[in-house]
Structure formats: C-alpha cells, structure tokens
Image 1 (tube, one colour):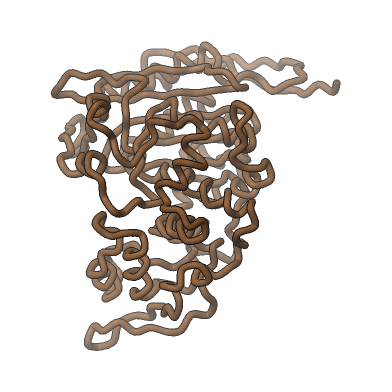
Image 2 (tube, helix red, strand yellow; image 1 turned 180 degrees about the horizontal axis):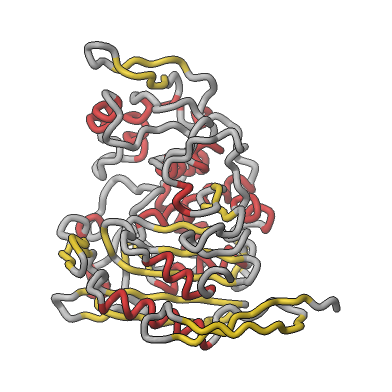
Length: 424
C-alpha cells in the first residue's frame, strides 16, 4: 500500500484558545490523520465556553462524527436563561435555512425517478410562473419598468439561487411590489405563494446572478406538484421518517415544548434579549410549509441527515439518494460567467451546488473560514451550522439560537477549533 505523508501540528491550548505552541513533525501513514484529537476536543470546548462566558450567546451545543463514530459532543450555557434551563443534547432549536438541504434532498428523490430534468422550466410544473417579466428600473413616476424573459427560470436555477426572485428591501419600486405581494406570509398555501410570486417581476434575468432568496420555497411546491402529495407529507414520508428524524418538524407538540430553546437577539457586546416573535411559528399549525425555512430539529436528528450525506445517500441500510445524486448536489453549479454573487464570497472559497455551498479551494488567508476542498454545507439565520467533509469522513452540527446571524465570528472560531488554526 502506498504511504502518504502528512504534516501534523500538535497544538497545546492555553486559556485564550488562540495562543498555541506548535510542534511540527512528519508521520508516515497510509491513511489521513485523525482530525478530532484530544487537542482538538480541548480547543472546541475552550472556544464554545468562551462564547458563553462573554455573554454573546446564551447556549451552544456541538456534535461531530468522524469515520462513522461520534468523536465529540458537548453543550454549554442555557437554552432558556430565565428558566435556568441548560442547553442539552435533546434541546430543540429553530434551524431556519438548514431546512433547505432537506428540501433539496426531497426534490432529488423525484429527480432520481426521472420525474423532471434540472434544466426543465419550472413553469412546466408550476404554471403560475409562466409569462414572468424582469425588472429594469423605475420611470420618472417611480413606476416599475420591465422587460421580457431571455429564458425561463429552470429547476437548476431554483436549486442554486440564480432564479432572479427579489429578496431585498432596497430595490426601488420592486421591493415595494414584493412586500405588497407578501408571498411568504405563513397564512398562504404554497400555491398562493406561487401565485403572488408569479405576479411580481424578477430582479434579474435567470442564470445571470447569484442571489439568495425564496427559491427553495418554490422547490417545496415543485415537490408537491410533481408527486401529487402535500410537501410536508412528502418530506416526512421519503426523507425524515426513513432517517428516523422524528424530531425534525414544522410543529412542536405540547409535550416537547419544554425542550424548545429560546432565541436571543444580541443587541451589543454581552447583551442578549429574548426574542418574542418567532415562538408561535412552531407551536401552531400554519398553511405555509416552506422549503427554505420552518423546521426545528435536535443535534442527533440533524446529524442523521449529515451522516446520510457523508455515506453518499444511505444510512443504516436505508437509501435516500444514490451516490451519484449526492455527488451532483455537492458539485458547484455556478458557471464562472456568474460574477455577481451577493454575499456568497464572504463564505470563503465556495461555489454553490444543489442547496449547499460547496468549497472549491482552500482558504487563502487566515481570516477565511477553515475547511477542506470538497466540503459542502449550509447554515441558518439563528446562527446554526452544519457541514459534510467527505475527505475526512467528518460531519459537524453546531446549534445556537442567536440573532442577528453570526456577527461574533462563532462559525469561524468553531471551524478553526475543529481543524486547527490556519494554516492546517
């Protein structure tokens, strides 16, 4: 067997978690080195504890698997400060956009059945999106001007966020139309959502820019239309139940609400205020079952999803997707010609696959997020995070309930703690 050479850094952690002594040695080995060593565990503990001690998060938990084994779990701080309830392994959290990869998985089960092609126009299945127009600005009376589509929105567009749906509050004229349509109001059904979105001009021509938005909510309706099954039922039957993700839900029953973490808004350094708005999203039944947000989960439940992905579509002898489908989802779908990519470059050296960011190059500077080429991942508005590292067979899930989205560099420091400070 051919032996590979790896340079391994042994790090001694000090109280700051960042001041390290490096002793570099070279080991001849036939396999990649273990990532989550005792030193890495100490690093992770130190980083997460310090965020809680600083008062910038109420509580945090993390779970990591490597080579099919659990190699790290810990939790710090509180799921509910006022009730003095600690963050625990079975704490339920709002995962927001970490719903998206689950929706993408549901959609791709239909792709495997040959029910659609990625370059099909979405109007083939959702006629509410026929005859759309594209925003070109406003006239002297502040009336929105439009032009015809150069091509229709494709299914590929809604899986990689190049559809053109507006998602900002500062587009003259268009943002007002979007807000008036109120397509994502939780009282809407998915069909009513599409009717309202279909009457609102696109912001740009499909396939020309990357702009995060409601594309994955459209995927949920696409699943519903193609399968003939309500989206919430389909994802439950074909993704969540087979993976035994029985605590990944839109609605939290009364018996489990004592485990539902509070969400906190960081108003200043060390100052947290409990959110009072989002709780009822999950304790009442609403017509809108979004594909892009809306699920709650636990660490172990979401880790089962991540483990299915690192095992190329299967877990515990249950196949959700074929290996080639997972590989397709984890492959960058953004052409070099798509130059305008909103805030995606802030994620580091990434492109975008099918409902995942995909790392295409190693970090170029110490300020960038750590990670391994081939990794695919996503996060959520309440600062949750997960990733799949196929090279090291490593999956990580980080749960916290913090608004605004990670302004404290939590994700960066957690990644550095896992892989070791740059360079690694």
